[in-house]
Length: 317
Image 1 (spheres, rainbow, N blue to C red):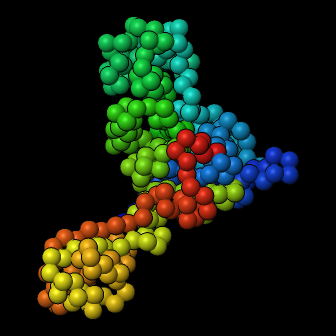
Image 2 (image 1 turned 180 degrees about the vertical axis):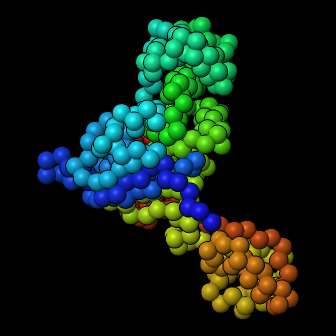
Image 3 (image 1 turned 135 degrees about the vertical axis):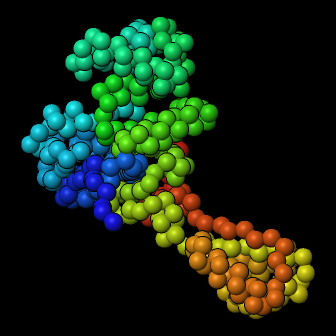
């Protein structure tokens, strides 16, 4: 089975401001057509990483390739291949949605016919046709964010950097944006995501990297990261105290609650372990009324690995 092509590859990435080392030799690989989320507490180096990869600032050291282009040797080719949607909307409030998109088409040096066609396609794709000729100042937060992302897509980038794309949106608008992001990936686009919402990373990302004090301290799929954290368990509830007693003897490491008729058994949340647990219950002829699996979430991962909670309103730098 062939290895997926890397849309983003960075090796030995370093950056310092004076004596302050911001990035300490990090390595990143993002396969094409996937969503990669970079998380980290304030001061971790997340924003600096995105700025370097998107050509906004230079690294002090490291090799970087974006969509097969060497960033140091050919930054203009990298810029042609990428799109960047920042944390704060870049739309012009005095222009209409359609005018904003046409302006971006001009900046991308699209000819008049191509620019108009691309504008119409994006207005339709982002459900902005009815509001196309209204000033952006009249748009809701969700509409502005959709327009902002649509402007990023005018040049049909193959790699998109999304810096906290749903900050300030209501839950419905946030989920709409999630679906747009998923649709982009299904079309072959690679997404490099930073977010202050851990639920967002959990819902969207194929892989997550956790950055702390300029170093990558963990990387993996959301489920892989959760399994690294202790606290996962299966809770069994019984109607017959005798069944509870037999289960407690079968699982000596379980925490028994006679009043609630429950038994809490440490568990990694994997399907294989769950099958083994059910097999042992069956062998012991134990009747279980209810079973529930509890696994740590990304908040637990963040707290355990960085030593501090992720505050929903605190930006992750």
